[in-house]
Image (cartoon, rainbow, N blue to C red; front, top):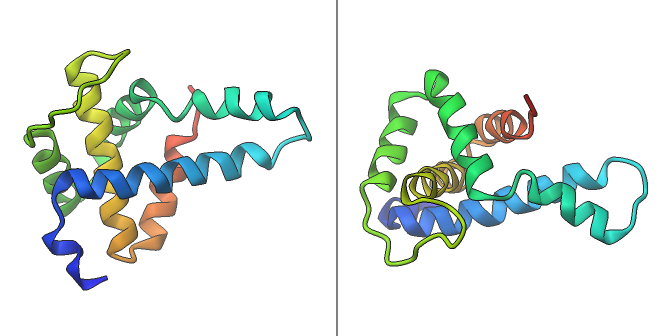
Length: 124
């Protein structure tokens, strides 16, 4: 998609949120057969602002300058929406993580996207 360059950081985050959620759900479904509620509870461990902010913090050392630029632009973007359960800093980091995923997806950087998504699912 060539027009992705014209998208705002928040539009990239909108796309990244969908990519992240779909990836996490796919990974959760790989385990043993379980009730739907169990899948949902597992997915919530990764699909929340705190988990995404922590993933971004861990990724900082391996991000390229171009990726860091996407993260920086997103963190500096004013967002009228606020997180219900998290502080503003955590929410901004999570939104930046999602924007990075959206940018990688729309840039067709599939190997790098997969690497970051795999990393985001690692539990400490």
